[in-house]
Length: 374
Ligand code: OSB
Ligand code: MG
Image 1 (tube, rainbow, N blue to C red):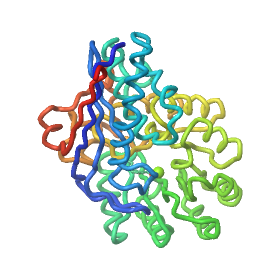
Image 2 (image 1 turned 45 degrees about the vertical axis):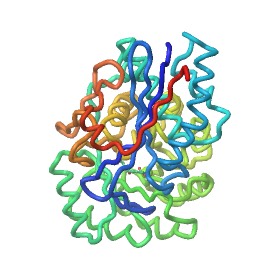
Image 3 (image 1 turned 30 degrees about the vertical axis):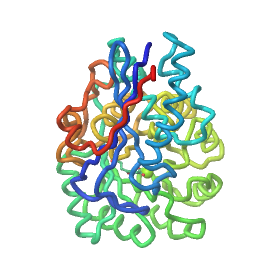
Image 4 (image 1 turned 180 degrees about the horizontal axis):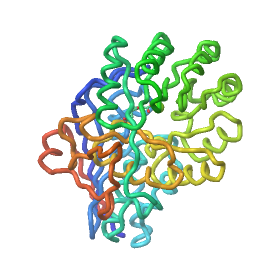
């Protein structure tokens, strides 16, 4: 393929409700959107980073800088050297020398892969190996000021049809909200996510969550403490699922071998893209480790690709693939809707959805065009 240029833009989308986690509160989703233009098609990618480096070390402004200053120039050189042999599979190897910045790398690879697949007339789902036409959906609920507010939010989510509820927890907001939700709603599919807010000294407290029959406990400890997670897994009965710790297929292999988790949250951005995400899916399937698709409050661009990934056979648990209206009053694409707790996998070429030009313009605060011949 022949890339002719890459556009990066920063878009600011107000969230319908502030999203509070152990690491902070997000009210506006500041998102880097990448557009890859080729001779035959154009493709889109979205960066999972937020305005501040609180979930991971990446943040939107930094992702824009590393793309403009390092990744796009490197891609320009690779495109020149490879000519027609250049394609999306070349991007990760070409950028491998640059450490980290996986969310940024993923946005670039996704945009080029989308352009390539659109030109070929192949959907993301077909290219990745999807086996389902729709995927079961869960919802991730932020920390609220009171337990009553949380119960109202859970009630509304169940009413909307979500098949699984995930509660964000942190020290001081754990056993009591979980107990209240379990008592009020009975036998629902319920799980928690601490975003690394606990320490090894909290093991006895965390063991109290075993009483509530949770589907999983996501990322209790810091991302670099695989041994701590393995130790925790030996003293609690709730299955441990890792999010932040799983930065690559190599990290996933280590976590599984150490017994640090029995379930994996796959976020394509966090691991550098959909191609690496598929390798983690395959690795986990070989170990009988269930996986599910995480989320980063994506717009319709990232959501389309996540829903395609979540349709692979190893994704046996509902994902954080919620409907557009759970995040945005107006999404960048046609909205994704929940039907009987499921979202349909787009069938069209590439992502199968495209940003609506006037909506994209309305929310764009900055843009840069990088010609591949310049
Ligand atoms: O830890 O899974 C997380 C959102 C932003 C950053 C980290 C996380 C999340 C979520 C929301 O839990 C998932 C979603 O609905 O997109
Ligand atoms: Mg998480």
